[in-house]
Image (tube, rainbow, N blue to C red; front, side, top):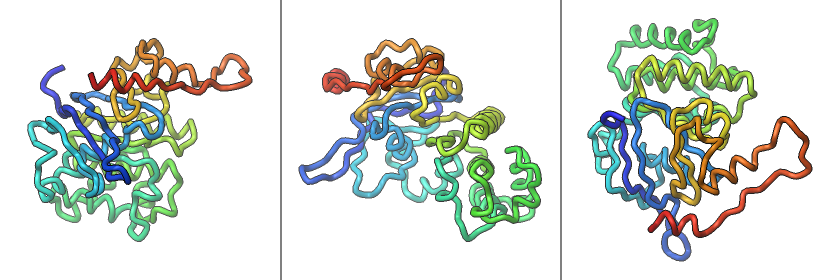
Amino acid sequence: MSEPLLEVKNLRVAYPSAHGYSDALRGISFALGREKLGIVGESGSGKSTAGRAVMRLLPPKARVTADAMQLSGVDLLNASERKMRDIRGGRIAMVLQDPRYALNPLKTVESQIVESCRIHTRASRSEARDRALAMLEDVRIRDPQRVARLYPHELSGGMGQRVMIAMMLIPSPELVIADEPTSALDVTVRGQILDILNERVEAQGAGLIFISHDLPLVGDFCDRVLVMYGGQVMEELAAHELARATHPYTRALNASLPPLDRRVEELIVPEHDPEWLSERRA
């Protein structure tokens, strides 16, 4: 890989607890180019924490340390909050799971996309409005003029997700972090959203971190995959090799998927070995 867009080395996150600090991330490292990197694992494995740590969106009580966390040479770990406000949304965008909670219910679609454009590109209001309508068309919304006047509660789940993608991508970010962006959608709409996300990211030459618990989806959509358990990276491999993974945890996740070609009485539940964590610390 050429010079990485994002470089993370030994990232650790801990939260205060009754007995000191409890680890959420235990020293993860990865690099990202202009590619699609999937992060998979069970709930609580640290997937979303990693994405939010890169954007410095963790609560103040979180203790975050790293040997390096850089975006194109910018030190994200030590950047001022003022600089991070420019980076968030401008150079790094995050597409969340449910647009009902991510979009402002009191503002129209147009006003929210225009605001995102003007904050990060300094475009005039009329220019930002034209770009907003063009972006709505780019994310395959059939009547952008009409949809632009709607409020979030008037949108379907799939349309709301397209609006959020439009709002996040209109400043042309270098890095997009998509945190379970399709888990609340049906299969047909999910495929459409993934196609749109892929098209827009490739058109802008951005890198993508795709966080999900859906292994087959990540295997089809991404270029590389990080498999996380207990706040650590268990395995890193090419996405097309996910079904042939060698680490016992990844193999356990694959084995827990329900087969489509035969009936089973009971699904397999992954078993966890504490040695997996001690091995990664060594």
